[in-house]
Amino acid sequence: MIDKTVFENKIAAYYTLGCKLNFAETSTIGKVLAEQGVRKARPGEKADICVVNTCSVTELADKKCRQAIRRIGKQHPGAFIVVTGCYAQLKPEEVSHIEGVDLVLGAEQKLDLLMYLDDLKKREEGGAIIASRTKDIRTFSPSCSADDRTRHFLKVQDGCDYFCSYCTIPFARGRSRNGTIASMVKQAEEVASNGGKEIVLTGVNIGDFGKSTGETFIDLIRALDEVEGIVRYRISSIEPNLITDEAIDFVACSRRFAPHFHIPLQSGSDEVLKLMRRRYDTTLFRHKIEKIKEVMPHAFIGVDVIVGTRGETDTCFEEARTFIESLDISQLHVFSYSERPGTQALKIDHVVDPKTKHARSQQLLDISDRKLHAFYEAHIGQKANVLFEQTRKGGMMHGFTENYIKVEIPYDHSLVNETRQVILEGWNEDKTALVVKIIE
Image (cartoon, rainbow, N blue to C red; front, side, top):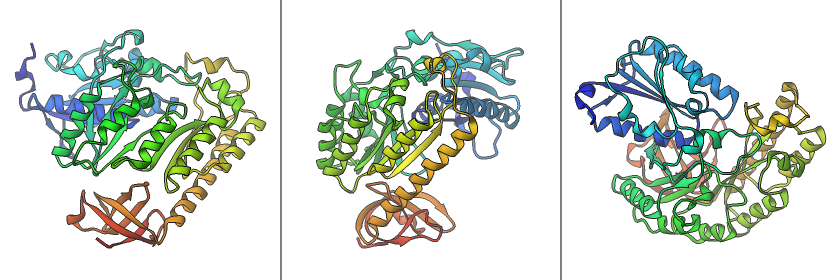
């Protein structure tokens, strides 16, 4: 039984590092505490409870988490600090000994934190650890969040069964699992009833949707497409072997799914893909890109790439660079390989030095800049539908077209969270967005 008096007049601050899935889960944690009367801290206000949802995708991510926890402890002296997320699941002992930490919650416990807060008294030596072994993580906890713009992030799946050689996420998140289609539709309907117009489907491996309910990803997107009030959906990162031709064809003719894809390639070298234990080759990847462009020539395609993995020789990188250059894609998200303890990649011999990693990253970033510029240029003069956002900068507001072109217009409060048809007129001053003219 939860003692509600513990939370009377309490103020909480929330900090999220990492992916959109983490943001969705932090939002749910905030709702759970709000139901107990805990108010969210205002800017500059000292909190009684601090919740830090961490990332552990790279060694740099771990370092940023440690720095954030220490900084938060100084900003909110005396606050009860709860740390959860992937870093907390993978290295709970390490996290528990960071100064100021009172409670470390694993992946299975994060959304049940009320059960573990007790009297909110600070601990003298080391935070308490409550975490399940990875193999025992089985619960799917629904989450949906709104960011400070207009879109919502709907968690449709969690965990991963792929165990790529470089990745620790299956150890941090557990096995693949998901909620039911009916529950996802219900959450989407709630977003619509609250005025939300755009939903991004998030998860660890969303194309694997249905593992725990016997349903399929294509059935999920078909059902969500029927929800009235939602203007558009975006599909977040989805494995190339799991985005079926059937799903691509459906998006092309759907009412609400945007022509916008984010597909991880990781390497354009078949030799490196094998070392990574990826479940596709470059031939399959090229087919998916060509299939999307065949039925949606205007589609935005973002691609993840990791450079400097073990085994990436000069020859392998040149193969990858050439392959990536040849793809009709819109943007690259480039990551430098980071050694992760316990991964199979550590058994691979060839190690890439930091200087070479940096040089290779820059080459791919240059390709990305050229491709993104060309994609924007190809749409100047065309009509598009834009959903405008709340944020403003320098008297300007922004929005995105269905195919993820960022646009800019003088701030007008009446346009916030509204869709308008525009003409894409040309670049803004610093070439970060296109200026537009509203035509209806």
